[in-house]
Length: 89
Image (cartoon, rainbow, N blue to C red; front, top):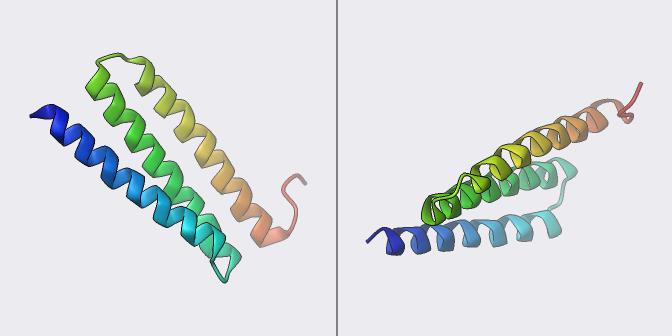
């Protein structure tokens, strides 16, 4: 039963990733693209956690934590670039 739930969840997150990718490519505004990239990061983190649950190894949870930290820094960098036009002062 858990196998079906894992595959269903991975399918849902895969669909969400494709929809976010569509939004990144065909978005009218830069802020929408940044938001879609941040949502893609969250979906990848969730997919990694689900694969870690299915596989039973803690490696995927550590990878999800690293991906979350990098995604947060990237989102903050994009937001700072939009506000000031410069990342490093």
